[in-house]
Image 1 (cartoon, one colour):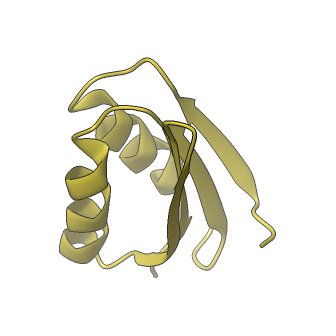
Image 2 (cartoon, rainbow, N blue to C red):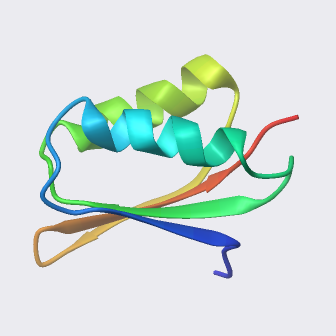
Length: 76
């Protein structure tokens, strides 16, 4: 799936992946898609929870070889 911006959160521990995603999403236009790559085990819970709390749409969450990839559509 296409995305408008990338966030490399590899090597960052909770809560940094979510904090950096929030900051990046604030700078994006509504409807744009952010791809986040993380390897923090807590991100599996934290990122979906963040999206639900802030109203962003979690388009996909996948994991391969220890790297989690999330596609998040910015809300209005």
